Length: 427
Image 1: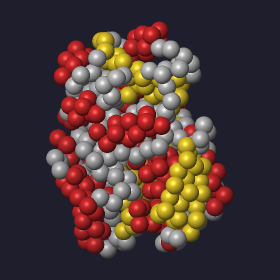
Image 2 (image 1 turned 90 degrees about the horizontal axis):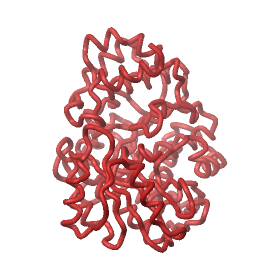
Image 3 (image 1 turned 90 degrees about the vertical axis):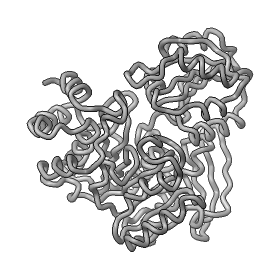
Image 4 (image 1 turned 45 degrees about the vertical axis):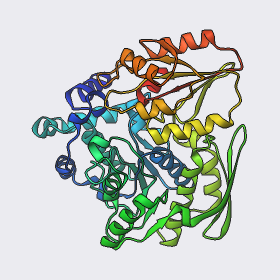
């Protein structure tokens, strides 16, 4: 198989959540353990940091990877989903794995695929572990997919666990209350392994404390470690001044959206934990340069990403209720004449709460991602009308963008949001 044929095999032979939804989820770790055993247990051959959470885990993973790369560590990074290229999921020092490796790995494991019928996500996790072991990384940042307890990545024994925050998303898989969702995310807390919690919330803190006590795992809440912070958004950087365990810290992060403040605090707390428990040495210069070069070092996409100017076109993958609230907070500090929103969603999301949050005075271009899980654009349009959101129907995100640009004034703002997969079509 060549690379295109290999991707066709991976995307269509294997059950893929992004394409078909929860029927692709294997709710145990059996297949991943079988794959790791077949591959001679690659995740035992390098150190890892494990990251879970509802929102922000991708940003936290990329920021940490940027900093550790600047500190001189050969740093692996596994994230999902991808936006432009499958190989975005598996990187070392910001460079995606090679096409020839994807082909080689798939051929090596094809008989095992036919035998155990794993999901697409299970195979990509195994591929990442194998690639990082083969390339002898010093440390790998591993982002969970859904949840944590039964997530395919949860076969690792990290030096540090990080849980960014808990909010409502994928309730049909993870639970209908915040404590239930927190219980699933807390599944990544391992015995005697420090865990950093990004957001301290009354409803979920006790879940994490109980689990960490059961595992004899030191627990640190970022809100307790990072205090007296203030932030300034400049044209190039988000500047955050804070006290980290009582010591002044100033960082300039090139991820400029205001919602990154919480992620920056989580990273600062994680760096504090790495130092406190003598897990990794990271000097101040690496912290500074890592924060200021996240996009350059890791090629992070889709987080308040500016694509065009006059009018500005910005894409953001925030798609659940908490993520949309963060986007709306950013909009409050933006300057524009008229707001245009290109919005599409997947059908297994309860979007009524999200539609109720969206600004009534924006011009909407309702669309749909090009995938089986899409929420039909006409259904979306009818739901949006119930929430007094007015706009037009566009069957493809690129059509929506073209129309929005034709209607927009140079001082307007066009925002693409609602789903990773709508952003994917635009990128």
